[in-house]
Length: 247
Image 1 (tube, rainbow, N blue to C red):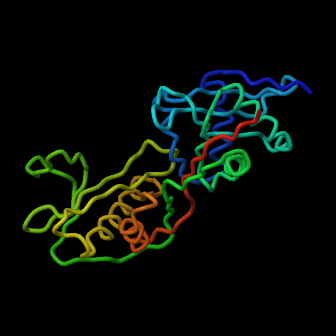
Image 2: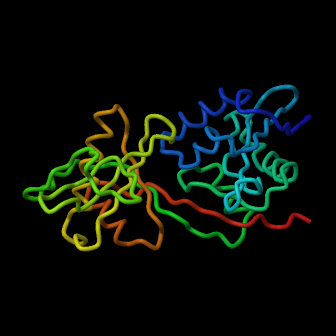
Image 3: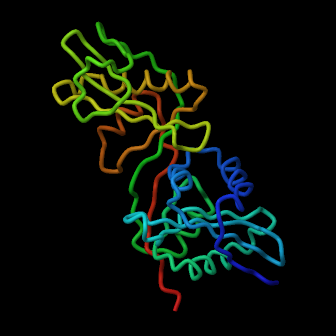
């Protein structure tokens, strides 16, 4: 058996990435790393056959390329996953592993080969349609007369007194997912505007042919409660750990 780990370009592994995303059927948070050229790609070749790929980026400094964030092997070759992963880590010099808990293959590598594992964010998928409503509140697109300051959101909730919340969709995730973001102005918090905003952004996403998804910091219970109230459900976590020494 001859195994080689070859640094390559995205085009060479695109067919494998398609399989990776189709098999997982979840929003992949770091998909943008490929779109923006933030990743180094490694092709796995065994006895002349392309069996998978890995991707490395810099999770703290993008130029560092010190973190494995994608790891995929075709099903017939999964029995070699441990060997391939260790070879990838040595070839890339990666010091960290970053993954989603709903990506079972890389998560298993994280649990076995990393220490100091931290949960950085909670991932959500849509599970329920909600019917929140607040009198006199309008969900609409931002217009030129809106006083947005440094807020570059595309949509707002407006009362006659002005804007109470803003948000939008991030579309740089793997299709068909759209990531919802929002914020409520301080004087209007804890009054249901956040869940209403999320609810309306969910409708917008579906109208665009997208599947709404969301995430929040692990230390943000208010955001978590808002998303759940708007019909989302926890579907995973973003995890990061430091690669153990193999010496």
